[in-house]
Image (spheres, rainbow, N blue to C red):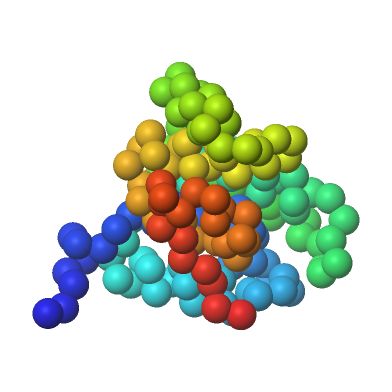
Amino acid sequence: MATTAAEQPALFVDTNVLVYANVAEAPQHQAALTAVTQARKNGRTLWISRQVLREYLVTLTRPQTFQEVPKATVLEQVRLFGEHFEIADDTHAVTGRLLQLITDTPIGGKQVHDVNIVATMLTHDIPTLLTHNGRDFERFKDYITIEGIDT
């Protein structure tokens, strides 16, 4: 039996996928763009968070191994993301879930950014993460489903 659009799980798009999908010169560009396009075509609700927006800005306003994107273009892209994605806000409830996950899971340092994505997903009932760095999230597979992009 075919799955309808309404049955497709919502999908949280990780920063790396967002960068790859939006920068033609980036590694894995086509795989990321195909994954996002296919998810949208399948009727999935696509989510990002304010954290992802900040990370996108950080990534694309520093020197890259691929062709640099003009700052004005990066800023316009971030403005447009609000029209193309649902935005999961970083609320008090997200912070509470973050603290609980850190208590329950042996992590620290920069891994807190990944845990905050999971906390955001859980708080906003987003079951699935689209990422190029699935290994970074494996410890949370009891909480979320991880979809990796094809490379």
